[in-house]
Amino acid sequence: MLLSRQLVRFIRQNNRLSQREFADRIGVSNSYVALVETGIKPVTANLSKKITREFGIDVDYIEAAKRFIDV
Image (cartoon, rainbow, N blue to C red):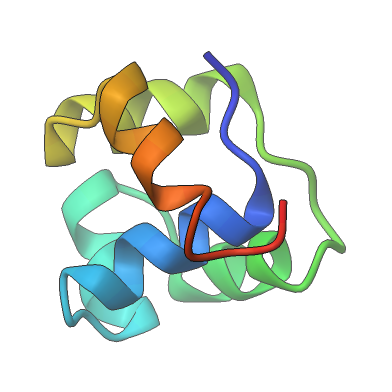
């Protein structure tokens, strides 16, 4: 399941993490997270996998989150 950039930002903010803290948790640079959140870099399948595993994200979570963000 591929996440949107809006979902990436929502997950990070919902966990009350800075971009640096979020990046550290998923093993990427904070600048990469910033580029993804602004839409400059795409959300790859690998990044989606890292995020969903680290934060225990499932389809139900994504559907619920979509009610709070514009995807």
